[in-house]
Length: 58
Image (cartoon, rainbow, N blue to C red; front, side):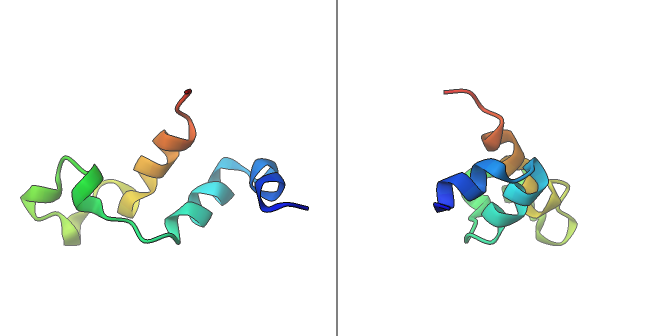
């Protein structure tokens, strides 16, 4: 099974966790980053942005 096929067969939560393992730069994506939210992140440590990206249509 190719990696792409494995990813396609994963649930949204499994995909989110897979992509969360990739280095993620909050400064590039998070509108709250400038407020010093490192210790009080309300975006599930970036997982919310990954979920949004996974559900975007191109």
